[in-house]
Structures are given as structure tokens and as C-alpha cells.
Image 1 (tube, rainbow, N blue to C red):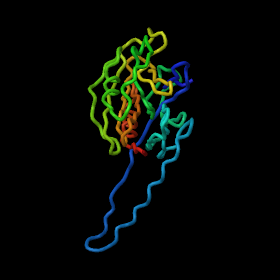
Image 2 (image 1 turned 180 degrees about the vertical axis):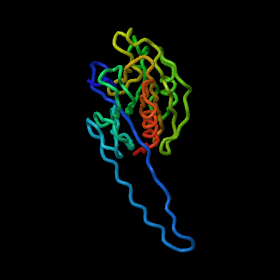
Image 3 (image 1 turned 90 degrees about the horizontal axis):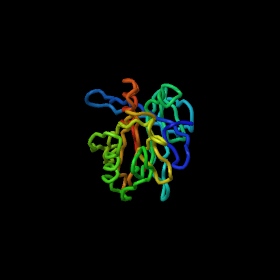
Image 4 (image 1 turned 120 degrees about the vertical axis):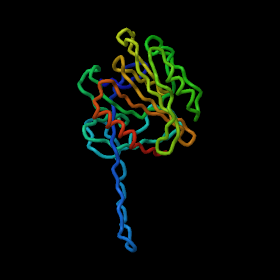
Amino acid sequence: MTMFARVAIAAAAVVAIGFAWVNFGPSQAGPGVGAQPTPSPSPSPKPLPNSGLVEPGRYTLITAGTIGPGPFPHVAVTVPAGWSASNGDLLLKNYGPSDAEAGPAFVVWQMSGTYVDPCTDHTLVTPTPGPGIDALVDALDHQPGTTAGPPTAVTVDGYSGKFVEVTVTADITKCPDTFWIWGSADGNSRYVQGTNEMNRMYVLDVEGRRFTFNARIPARTTAADRAEIEAIIASIGIQP
């Protein structure tokens, strides 16, 4: 069983996530005359595999956690070597088989709200639905048992929104049923793998619809892997 997201009524398998930079460079004709070379078309992204090690390249991740009306946008990212996939919506790079060794991850998931108490009361508190992003960002930013940076304005592939970085400070070993930091309309939830885990959660307005995704960057993430997940985020292309 993976430990990234779970169904509210039962543990569900989940895995984690990652990404890479897109390289490009100009070409120049000689002075005065000469035709510019025709650029080669970029290859279309492939669907992310359901499981296993992912070959480097550009992939489309499905949007999980949605309950009509659809379809929701998809996200395309460039994946570097060494990352694995799960369920078509998760990228991850773990350092071992246990939760204590979970590494960076990326998931495209529709967050619906947070919980009364992530440790002790898993009653979902759902912000006002619709395209507005501030209510959800504020809920993510003010959860018991966490510290969070201020919401930060961001533009991703031309779409505006905000992200917030939330770090778990509570001792999750004292939680009756682990520590949940967001839930979705389909009954799934995201729970953390350890105290001091940091999750960066993005909330965007994509053509009038609230659209979300999550990057997990725990303290154990190596400098090289942190650079890779930042590159994956920088490579995001949103397909409405």
C-alpha cells in the first residue's frame, strides 16, 4: 500500500511524484538574407503510466478527486530520469519502502477542503465552491498542528492563483488515524508520512474553475531531487 492519498473510509493505495526542465535555444540566420529554419514540432505528451519507473519525457497526468461535472483540465509535465508513477496522477521519488523514507512527490488532485482537526477530527470543512481560490487557500494555510508560509501569488502556464507551503509540526504518531491535510469531493484525503513533512499546495483559477495540485517536499529531500521537483513544476502545461 502506498502512503500518499487515502479514501476517507478506508486506506487507498497512493504513490508520489516528480518533474523536469524543458530545454530550448534560438537559432539564427546569417546577416541580411536567409530563411529561418523551420522548428521541429514538440512531441505530444504521453499518458502517465499507471505504475512503475517512468522513462524521461513529457507526460499528461489525469486529474484525480473530481466528482462531475467534467472533464477537468489535465496537466502535462516533463519527467526526469529516476521517477516513478502511480494511478496516472502521481509522480514520486522515494528513498526506501517505509513512510519514514518517503521522498518528493507531485499529484494532480482536486482539493475540496480541510478537516476540523487533521489529527483528531476528520470532519471535512468545505470552502465555498466555485472559481474563487481565497477561501481554500486560507483553509490550507490555517490548520491545527501545522505552520505555514504566507499565501504566495503565482502564475502557472498563464493561469493565476496562489500556493501555500504547509509543514506539519504535530507529532503524528499521537494521531488516532494519522494526519490529514486536505480532502476531495470523491471521499479521498491526503495524509502525511511524517512530522516536519512539507507540502506545497497550489490553487489556480483555470477558465473559471478552481484547479489544484500538490508537491510534497519533505525535509529529507536531497538538493538534487529538490531541483528536479522545482523543474517539474516549472515545466507544467495546463490543458483545459
